[in-house]
Each structure stands twice: as C-alpha cells, then as structure tokens.
Length: 260
Image 1 (tube, rainbow, N blue to C red):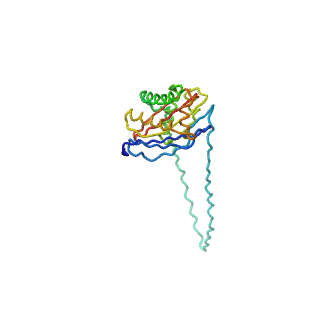
Image 2 (cartoon, helix red, strand yellow):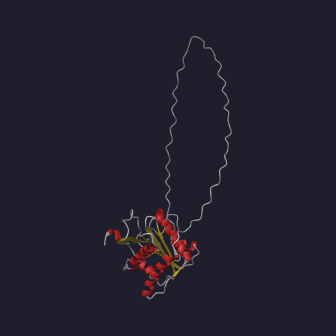
C-alpha cells in the first residue's frame, strides 16, 4: 500500500493524580499526505478520583537597571579685567503658556464573549460511540451513555488542543479534568480521559474512520502500558463525553471523557 493510502495517527495522554499506563503509542496507516510538524506529547492516560491536582508554580523575574551616576561638575575659571564691565540687564524670561490637554473620551472595552465549543455532528458522535460500545459489549460490559454536558467539556478541551496547546490533558489556564467536568454541571465520583489526533479527509466517513482507528489502537494496548484501554473498558465509568474535530489542514482531534 502506498504512502498516500496509509493513515497515520498518534495516541498520547498526560498524567494527573492517579497514573494508569506509561508511554505512548504511534501507529501509522496513512490515507493523507504527510502531517505538518509533530506536536509535543505527554506519556500516560489520565484517571482521577474525587478531585484535581493543584496548579503549578509561577516564576517572577525582576531585573533592576543600574542607577546612572550623576555627572561631575567642572569648575569654570573666572576672568578678571581692568576695564569695568558694563552691566547689561538680564532678559525677562517669558512665562510659558500652558494649554490644558483635551481629554478624549474612550469607548469601553467590549465584554469578552463566552467561549463556544466546536461542534461535532450527531452522525459522527453516534458512529464513534457505537464503535466504543461494541468493544464494551464484546468484553461483557454495559454500554456507555453519551452525556451532552460532558461532551461540551470534551469539545472545549479539543478547541484548546487544536490551538496553541497541542496534545495535553491540561492546557495553560485550564483546570484539571474534574474541574472542567464540574464547570459544565457534570456530576462525577471518578473520571478519566483519553486524547489523540490523526489525519483524515473532509467527509464524515473519513473523520469517523480516523476517530475509530485511534480507538482501535487504544483497545490494542497491552499491560502494563494499557491505560487508554482500561479507560475504555472500565466497569466504573458509566457515561462518556466525545468530541471529534477536524481542522482545515486535515488534522483530526479526539477527546474521550469518562465519569462514574
């Protein structure tokens, strides 16, 4: 099979609180042209129970400029003369005119618009969820139900990853997974997350194929590096949030969020 017909995708996840699995998986099946520059990746899928880790530390750097030494005054010699000097009256200094500055009214800064989550079509969500639940049924597990509030949290995280963040479980300025879920009104006692990205054409079928291909690679993991598989086949998780977003360059971002 030629390089143009292979599909390439990469699975990665990062740790918060309890770590499951180590390492990351890179699997290639390319159906598109070679992807752009590879993004940085974390090493483990994410699972937390009952809360989130704290925020990181900040570093403050304070550079003080050296004070400029005062210039030294050079004494001037006073000339003497036998001829008396004529005293010339000093000119009267003109008082500078001060014009009050005109204060221009400035318009207030527009209020920040609430961030909208990128949408995934219902058709794509249904097909991706069915693929996951088929694997759970095969493992004699109950199917996961799709939670719209949890899917919104997934979509907002996908939006950050596809921006400047890259493949990370927690982007700059973003809370941990439990905090993100609670912010959308999701009730949870245990939580997990799988993330990944691949490449696909613009059709729904191609996007679904990319998402399901990522899922299949997660399910194919073997112990001890099988954290993604454990999330997908967990008995504790009952609901799932899904977001599958394709960028204009063909990159497909996948976020799977789980709660019990």
